[in-house]
Length: 451
Image (cartoon, rainbow, N blue to C red; front, side, top):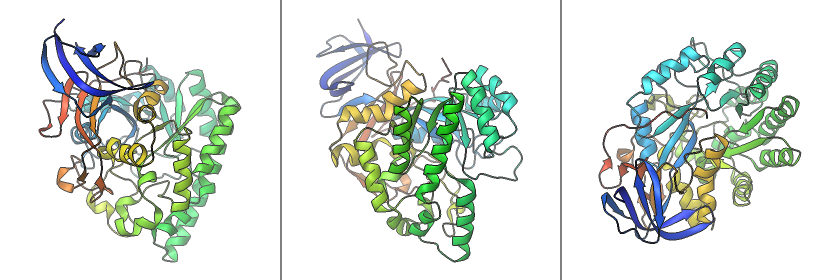
């Protein structure tokens, strides 16, 4: 057989360990895995000394097109994802305008995404107070999951996203359970965090530690507990996004033992930064939930290394640079981070803390592919999409603004040294990022819908 692509001599990460192997790709699929492939190929990549693993599936990305394309668009966002080792992403129903809360609004996003994405993509539907009658049409349109906020999110901009009240959460969960849909929840108690924030701001408490204190651990735990209680009552499949505390994860673990269908994600910034470091970084490190103090982070690391976190996401939430000015109360809350998912966490978790590389692959690819029912992706195996990344554990570099592909080139990771590097990103057999060449070719990303 003649192949379209052969990846030779790499340390291939399988579900049960790492083995040196060649990978043959034809018609966008992995069709051969062997100790050595001697057949011809249109392209051969020498992967000696590098890890060969499935590309990341980032299920928490905010692309602001249409409506706020000046924050981030599909072209720049997907370039950033590709450069960071992501081969497929699921895009949140906000911050684009209008929010993805109806079939009509989804179509605007579908149209805008055509021929702009360098990696494969999918779209969430949103659950908000006035769209209970729109959930079925979004499901029929193929969204793989829904998203809602228990934290405070209000806007006077027409078409913007809003948080749910308990009635909407309950009725929405009932409907999504009927549809066999997954509900992903931002879980923070809205009234307490809003009032504490106002109180702290009025007192001039502007430090990173004080910002974290305004959104205390128990406000995450309370909202997680409430979501789980509603899931027990309704039978809705549940996923808790960007969880930042061990206490919340322990509540989730207990619920699993009781039979609740619930999973949990966290994000690199909760492992890379502490609240004590936020003052030096500034508002670029502002997010919700907040970056936590070092003692809280240490317990979160224990949860990750003990296998109690299902997968990692970027929560890439970009904005224009002017919105990151001022103090932590005035600045926009969101971190531009999707270009530094794989390398940063490989460095921190695998190299520095000894996490098995196959467990790392579960965190970035295999587990989200299974939960979001994307059967063609998430692992190196025969007949799977050839979504593959090469990771060199022996390279080091410093994150610089000029190397970022974001539309607005700012990131909390600027100036950080990372002892690992993504050298190639391959989507369905097509090289879309090469460390020496940058972004390669034209956008060929495809829409992924609910199976």
